[in-house]
Length: 54
Length: 276
Image 1 (cartoon, rainbow over the protein chains, first blue to last red):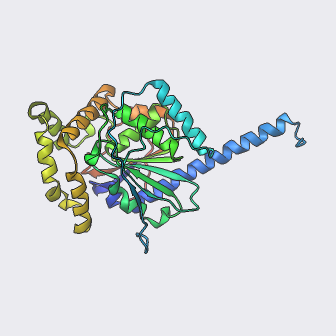
Image 2 (image 1 turned 120 degrees about the horizontal axis):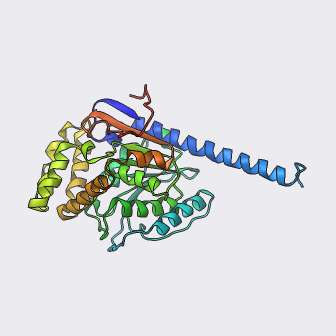
Image 3 (image 1 turned 120 degrees about the vertical axis):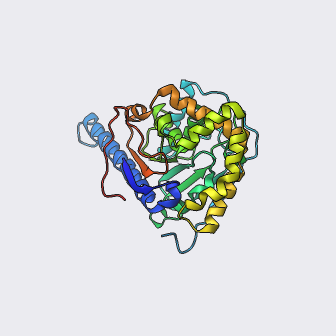
């Protein structure tokens, strides 16, 4: 939760740089989650194939 | 700071008359599954949202996308400042006008649940990784996650978690409308220009946003606001729904002006210092 000091009426219009920063953070989170999922899948594949890649 | 060369948003306008029934839980889950597919590279168009007015910046090399939901009575035009932010130049940004807002055709069912269902279909079909919502749009985004229809991160700008969180004048308008029908909202739309003088924006930009407000049909606004408050009242507080959705969420609010800090009602959100 982020509290902006003072009055805020139309956040996207008044604070676009801040919102952009948060959107980037959110997209980074998606990327991290996707990489973790891929890593889990790779580990699963290696386990299934006995780790020899066949 | 905006781009030196302004983006050329693609404004697509839908004119088809939309009559949409309430969505079932099955529909909602289906939309969520479609979202997972789209993130994997497949594109499925489910159709109900395709007539929505939208503004889009589409860098050729964009691999990630964000869906932007404006506030009540606002249109996709509201997000022009955000879409012009250099930090987002590599991201596909899709701002939509929620149906019924800005004089666009309204579905029969203007409930937050139904709008969330449609927005989740839109997010899934367009492969959006993140949803950003402002005010009522933030509540639609919250409901997308709470219903399980969208499972990505949310950026919620000035959401209200309960009726008490909403601005006093807006609650008053809702009450007046029970007696006076659409008239309080007709008056509101007429007053929007002068009222927006407090916004720290250039006068010409304020006028653009005020003109977008004036496109609204006060009858539709009245219906939408009634549905909105019914949604908040039905849950008492939707803060716990956000927590139970278990998606990453950034919640932004002003100390005053946008209704202030939403009441947590026992739900726990971590305060992030150092942003302002």
